[in-house]
Image: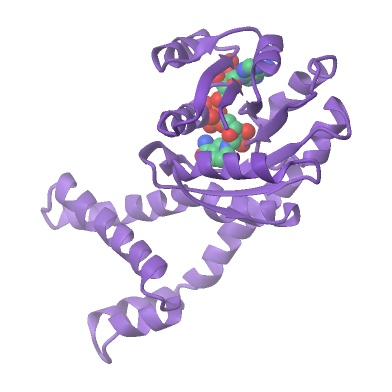
Length: 263
Ligand SMILES: NC(=O)c1ccc[n+]([C@@H]2O[C@H](COP(=O)([O-])OP(=O)(O)OC[C@H]3O[C@@H](n4cnc5c(N)ncnc54)[C@H](OP(=O)(O)O)[C@@H]3O)[C@@H](O)[C@H]2O)c1
């Protein structure tokens, strides 16, 4: 099935997605509109044709809505008069329910809500998506295949999108923050910043790979690294003494709550 893609908003996330979608064989054309001229220039350099918002809708099968949540109502308010026959909305807008789109665009418009994350830029993204009842199996498969071009994909229920947002949508930033806290410990010991980043990033990557591929749960993997009286146990004892486990739960819950507020 050949597919014409359209982006409304071509910011950081749309750029990351399109740079992977290019590798999907069946895209015949990509159109975009953005209120920011420099973003449109970037889109053009990536082979995307800039047109009006009405022409993005008219000329695309899948319309990716990639604006910030606070810009969505204004955008959708101007789109109700477009014909949505045969179109599917693919929204990456954090927190906004599919009913927000059907409210403005028509109650039977197919809507796929997607929560990607920024490692999509390197083809290492994590995407969760949910569909409303008007999305065909064929379109669902195409969208899943497109996001497979930028990493891993799972399907969830719409009610689970807030928790997905708090875990994988915002998640990269939590790990960057941990990296930022550990960096000075390495550089204070005269490791170069490059060496420090390599130590931290490869450890994160390796731990992620173990979680993904070893078939072991986190508890078992922790035990595998922990010899009695050893260095890991010393670190983990301090981890618990500082209450970092419950602090991390608070971090994720705060992001989930914010996603719920954005609805
Ligand atoms: N970044 C992430 O990690 C991440 C992860 C998952 C999901 N998301 C979601 O992805 C969406 C986009 O995020 P982003 O980081 O890519 O934002 P971004 O870089 O700010 O991109 C949004 C772009 O849309 C433009 N825009 C605003 N209103 C518009 C309109 N009415 N018509 C056309 N273009 C319009 C903006 O232009 P101006 O600069 O002029 O406003 C901007 O260039 C957000 O809803 C966010 O919740 C982001």
